[in-house]
Length: 366
Image 1 (cartoon, rainbow, N blue to C red):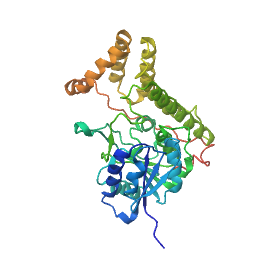
Image 2 (cartoon, rainbow, N blue to C red):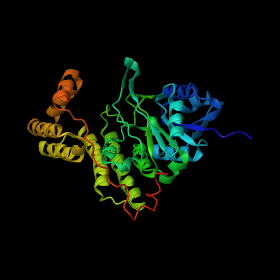
Image 3 (tube, rainbow, N blue to C red):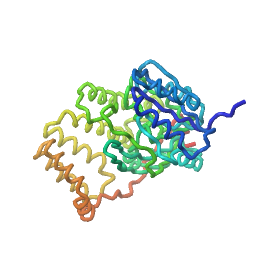
Image 4 (cartoon, one colour):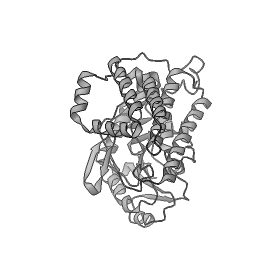
């Protein structure tokens, strides 16, 4: 009788035939026993060369073709079919770097209560031979125990996750109306069913190209509206799951966490539909109110000044100025030296009310 694999590498793909071979090869190149990894490719009804590319690896992968339904449906099919106790996610146009699986398994073995191990990724422009690391704030443990953790957790995506299947089952199914941003649902809810463990090494490359389902480079208004809609629907599903599982959404820490996520969606919408000065000013003040507990008093004052600057300049001119500031290492170093934004210690807010302590939420820490 064949032994079940330890890990399922779940590759979701749609019309990424020109990239899929690289994604599969990056899994095959992992420094982890091949007998302990299964490669499961879920094809979301591609109309390009994806089936032909997959057929070249027929002896090394399991290939499942389904009717087109989007990322949420791909996840649900893949999670149901996965045989590994750990499921590591990869999009068909991205690649893992060597050591990815070994690092994730070590992290989960060292923290047996954790349901999710995660890491940051690199932004990759292969045509320009450019690759740079994304910013990362590692948060480990039971995240809802600390407000600071709730407000800094989450700067990773699909290709940065390794999930313990037994724990993942607690939040399934993923809503299938999430044709994109289905990973938002997983990222937001896994912290409420188990601790997580962060690994600060950049272990995947996120390929930039015009066909990215969540790309902001393309000017397609319909795609942009779909992204914004799915992001909002994803957060609504998160709210629904939390309410259904006994979490009080009025609790200050949860309210701040959810508003933090909502502000990200608002900023996404602004990128394609510029707000008026008053609307943008309110957004910046809401952002400062939610994230103020992370900042020093001096940095909070600095944010007040920048908000007033934005009110005077308007969204587009202010964002252009902000972009120049971000590109200047010298300016950022001077600001950090004179106005540090180091996060002060913030007292933990109880994660559960007494009524929740024995319920589904109360048992989350394992």
